[in-house]
Image (tube, rainbow, N blue to C red; front, side, top):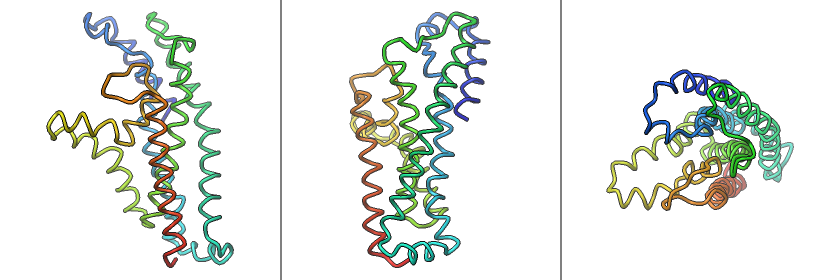
Length: 228
């Protein structure tokens, strides 16, 4: 998804670029189009993060895991560590490949952006970091809810449903709350343009990491308190 949708989006934009008006061309951001696959891949990664922990509860295998590891917490930390390392190892090459493939398509119309452009390398690597934290955030939610359907619904609600719903609030409320939403805060790491109402890239990403850490902390607390 990260690579394929990026290539598709860049191909579509490159094909229609000559028909864009001056305003659209002035606001065109080649990196934003290039990382569109990340927005779609995060759903798959989030669902897998939930399944990593809820799958054992669904089958009842969690009891065998806890019998083998009576202290319980090492099970959660092992799942978290392995998933984080696998995601990072896969996502860094994926986002880099998506960038170079997408930009090679845009380069045919001379609308590409270089990796050396200020903020671009940080955004591309930041996309991989963002997806990694997405996975851990979802894993934490799954460990709290302990139900596959409930975990996926909670993850999707926080990441994809709540942000648009904020648009029904008064503008002042929306502007005050939106930057603190997990997806909006974490997504700043992938952007090279920012407004006064958004966090800086690393501040927003740090807040997003805080959300993931908080869900894992709550999951750890409940894991040792509740029956399997």
